[in-house]
Image 1 (cartoon, rainbow, N blue to C red):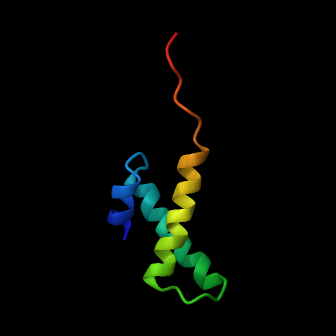
Image 2 (image 1 turned 90 degrees about the vertical axis):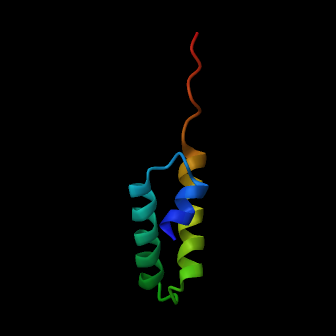
Length: 62
């Protein structure tokens, strides 16, 4: 699952993707949601999208 997500989020280090997947699993379990692989991947994907979309744009040289 981490490798699949990492291939979709090339700018995110694999360690961050791994941590996001682990956090998504823990979050689902904490909330009492059945932590199926599909659910965990969907939660992790949403978190990664938020991470990527919240990054500031690259600076352009003057």
